Image (cartoon, rainbow, N blue to C red):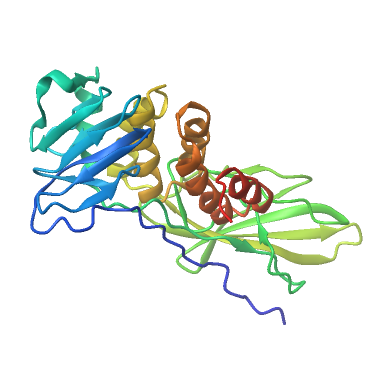
Length: 311
């Protein structure tokens, strides 16, 4: 009897948050960093700037020539860019002196969702990978939905790698221990076509059974996903505007929110755009490497690893 193995591992990347901040109040996060930028705490301790690092009240931000840094403020989601060599001090409502500050144009709805992402926990992502069943292989399989991810639609599409000598595939979706949908296709993908949509906020298991030309059945892949809650779906619609922007700070916020919400596929799409648009793409390749691994995209993860210039 084929034993159902564990198909999930969790991996969390902690973003550098300002060490040595003491009891200072967090006021902003860094959403864009180019060139040499140093942050000095009110206790006089220096730290390097990093994407999505926390900025505290009274932190001093020093920019070398040609450096640029953009901050998103927790209070109301407004964005400020510093791009003049010098030093500014962060406060709850912005940086001083104002002569160094450029306010980025962000619509009121975008500021609302930006504030939500800025105030969120500083984690890049978490999620899982699928394991091929039956062969004893530990190589991750690129499944959609990504294992343990959250999907926005209540009628998801299912994709999986082709299985050698498979003549057809049966997809089975279960919830609460009961099969709720079974569908057979000649080739992937398959779309959920049951009369009733899947329910928001609930987790579902799905599996793929490969059918041989002689009718033999071979369990091939299995995974788990969750349908977004109504509130998550509403937030996702709001964050879509940020995700479609060409502004690096707005894309950074969108990628952060998607990843923290478990929407790994959406986070990958935004991070890929960031690697093309950011002045320094390395931090985003670091994030992409982990996101690709969570999605079972080993080749893409290895390529991102090389581009991240990590040893």
